[in-house]
Image (cartoon, helix red, strand yellow):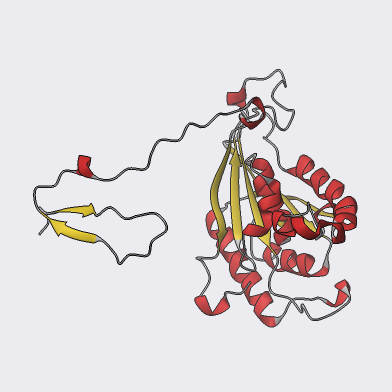
Length: 259
């Protein structure tokens, strides 16, 4: 059985066909149907900008700059039905989610160099719970820059963008300022890595991620995040950005998952 090879029968685009994976003998992989090659014209604006954080010319050897690991944590489940932001506190489930995520961070991080969180109640509560679970936090900061908001009008609102233009006008400069302040390569140090934990909101996290990867930021609404999930990006001394994991909630029992 293991000597047999899998092959795909040809299917027509636009038609519905049953699964066409069959076992057969004496068929080489070279007979597989491949898509036609696509000629991609990469313009200058689409090329990777290694100086995206404006820290490329620091006059230091990039090898002396440790990897900056940034852990973006969404707040736990909260009382979404409340009208006032100050009343949108964590539910009991949200508190459990936050505690589990805090223990997860403790298991993977021996120390945290920067612990930063949004001033919005649900994010602050999440941060407080996580803070009491982790070890060796060097510096903490609370900032309005990370508050929830409309980072940029997403593609799916393009036909009715006028309703969201004011929100974007108010929120986008603030959230972009937060990105420029916190999402960047590290500084010269003897350490092998710098660990930053940021507790904030789904809109902010998704925007940060797309901006860091130099992808279309208007696609942020096309992604979803579990409550108290962890997204990790790493930035090396040359400004290269790697997404390590997105919306990780594998440390939670399935009954704790919510969006």
